[in-house]
Amino acid sequence: MLKPVLLYTKHRQIIPILRENENDFILIDFDRIWKYLRIFGKTNTSKLRVKAYYLILKLLKPAIILDINWIGRVAMIHHVYSKKNTVKFIAVQHGFYTGGYISTRFPEGRWHKMARCTHFWMWSEYIKSEVIDNHANFIVKGNPLYNSYSSYVRPYREIKKVQSILILPTAFEKNETHKLGKLNHLIHKLVAAGYQTCVKLHPMNEICPDLSNVTVLNDVNLYTILHQQEFDLIIADHSTTFLDALFFNNYASFCNFHNSPDTLYERFLGEFDMELLEENVARCISPERVELQVDFLKKLGLNKVYNNSLLSFMN
Image (cartoon, rainbow, N blue to C red):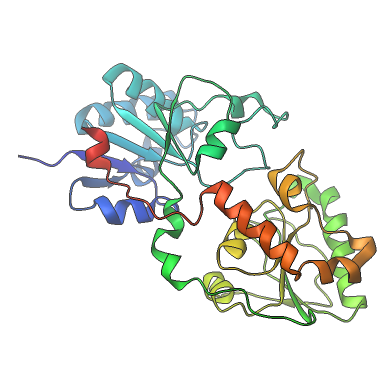
């Protein structure tokens, strides 16, 4: 008997799920298929390209479609196909976006208020409680990304005074030059105060802040840096690298470079105060701060070991 087909996209949140289910399914990367179909039209809106992809779906007859996106062109095709063919189209939560995931607390775009999939894989019951009602079924199965890393987490190391700081901003797009001011101001303040300051830019970053007086980290493994706790303090915005820093028990602080509305980070951890720099840095390594970070991780469900068998879910 042939194994069922699992269509997927290659993303760091998806890869651990594939590893645990590779023996039960025929795995097919749908991004490659969509890319090859450019021969029918180079744009995502090409009707011929869309029809060709839909025909391939009918031929492959996937049992499960696994994605992190529910709003793009391919995701919309998956949404239509799954509804017509009772296929499980699972969107895996992979971050907070600008702090709102699919919540009423995200006012900038209505498409965030509906997950166009049959099932939405959530990290925790807390996050599920924050999400507004829509047509998807919400399943709480934990965060796949950290399942294999839980045994490598070190306790918080004792730091008497912060000397080294790593800044991890999320991507800035070409039209967001006006948002660099806050990041540039932070870099200037830290350098002027004598902190050893390093920056690692997001791989999809399109415009750069002023990096003339800091060390820029390129071609390094961020997981290794965070696991080894190589920096005394991590400052990040709503990029999921902030979650990485928290998971590996780094002292971390949120700075809202993009001025995102009502983020969970600010709600639970507050925002880094650049104008009270020395006092804020000292608070970031206090026992009270550690307690806040641990409680935040528990609410998110990031440190919970789980099982993600898709075959049992399908049955």
